[in-house]
Length: 104
Image 1 (tube, rainbow, N blue to C red):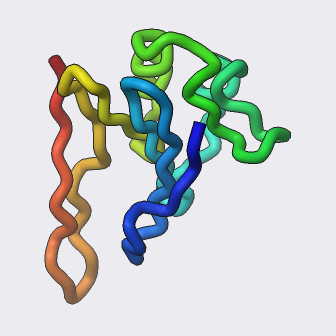
Image 2 (cartoon, rainbow, N blue to C red):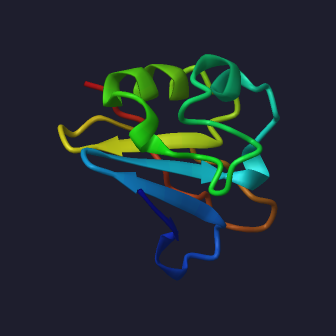
């Protein structure tokens, strides 16, 4: 498992990479609903560093739990083309941040 900050992006999105899936987390969006830690503690553990380990469960299990994240702080890209990203948000005085959600 590998943790990275996405390509030097200023948006603060972190990526957690495993075979077949990249899990993303955007801390500024997180509402701490804990759907992730209750739903799949083998992958999401607040006491571990890094706190996300996508090798802890199957891709399908991980995707199912991430899809329950109400704030879209968690997202993913899978090897088979599935993905989840936060919807675009208009910022005051600035352009919209382009994001999309696709499932398949």
